[in-house]
Picture 1 (cartoon, rainbow, N blue to C red):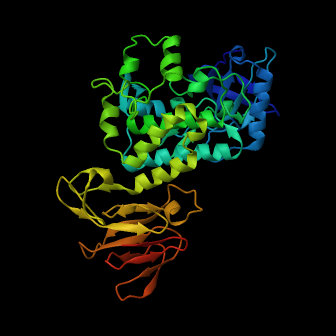
Picture 2 (picture 1 turned 45 degrees about the horizontal axis):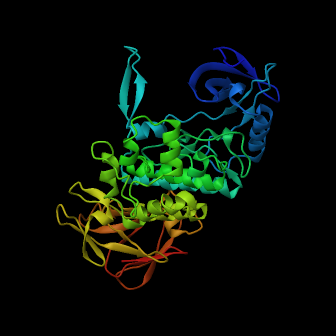
Picture 3 (picture 1 turned 90 degrees about the vertical axis):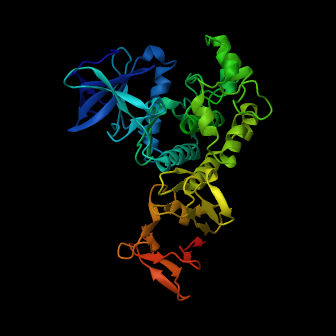
Length: 447
């Protein structure tokens, strides 16, 4: 029973039945259906077992994942297994993707196809991040999701652009296709998607594990930021048809990063890789250096690959360095001028931005109306990368007077212009002035 029909009932492992209400999509291992179970809508992944090397072992791994539970709420995790049919086919239920999330592949394409209910025609609908902050938050969340997965001793094994749904307004992330996730060291014949696989897998000398996940993670993050392939440059373009032998060469045995500082043979080609050329110039050196490391020494030495926590810290810093100038220019601080060691200047309009220094951090955060810092920045133990802890606002009664509003649930201690420390309760604020100092508890900040 490789395919299910609308209205068909599927029996779950421990009783009850789910009713098929529609089809969502299909992939290499089977199809995903919309089903109704106990009055609630779910997604049912139904397998074509001829595409699985060892269906019994594969199903047992899904069962174990269900019993273990998801590493966090960032995963669309298997919830209920179905019974095995007479022909050996089976599936599992998982939560449906919320409407507010878009497929990463659509984000990379910048659009998705929607069927017009009146004409029946497919219409392109733009899919773009609301702003830089949302995009960088997505990078933080992707890095954190795989840190959480690896911390429980499991690897994804087939990490690619089809494995994520992202909210383009907030940067929230949901990891999907979690059925191939297995204990590190185990593998069920999954190789991966070309362009995302680690070179050692392409060459056939290793199987997927945490180390190959780290390589694939770097590819995902590169594509998110630079909208191109880290190994596709002029050397690859010369091969008109990417045969299996060509893929082995360009993504395995002779892989070269497009911005390898020691090897210029595979630079991006204007007219083909314009996004990579454009965006590479926009990022600070510490971001570019991380990708250079990932795709040079990291190609062959698995121990030199960037770990998830390092990516996390870098993107938290990058998000704090976004400047949105009233003149309309929004970019990273490295694209603004430095008036002095503590002040940025907009190269377009000349407006200047003071900065806030946090303890335990090398970089300073530019201050502008709407700039914000997050719970994870004032509490080193927090893994809440979306909760805004503080925001720079303008006093509604006194235009031009700026202050930092406490958006957290904690009470701060701030040095006011009278030189004394005063309590700043949640929802309240403190004025911006040259001697400002704020004690958040575990972290302090000062102008």
